[in-house]
Picture (cartoon, rainbow, N blue to C red):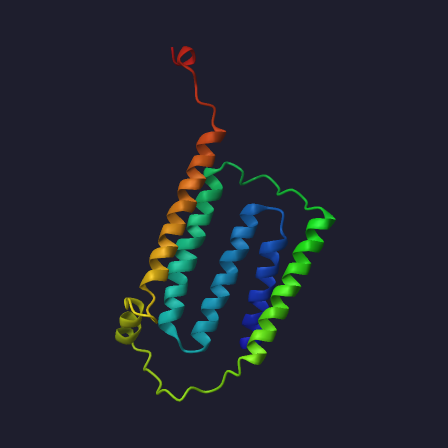
Length: 171
């Protein structure tokens, strides 16, 4: 099941970054995020799978789709990148994967000596709302501000594209 879901995620992730249709890219991203939720279900992390579906599939993808529709460019193809840009992107991706591999290989990750915390809804909720060093409240707030800025940016782009009628045209 892991290999099937992994192949599903990689396929739709690859399709989402290589397609020239922006609407299709958003739909491929939707399927990729659903595949990640499937991985959470396979690992028996039902709460994280539900959060993945509600927050990312239900929230982020809908926000992206609304942003695409607000800009009135959903039917246009994206421009074809030049060969130099493609080379730079692949070189940077290779460097990023190499650095990630080196960091993970040298980190010596192993089993923790700390006792495992039961993944109950109460424990997960307390960790998410914690404001201390290992809490997730600040990242949630930062993401909400980022999404608000993206939505405002999409509205500004949509308003700039529309011609504002002059006073003589209103009469």
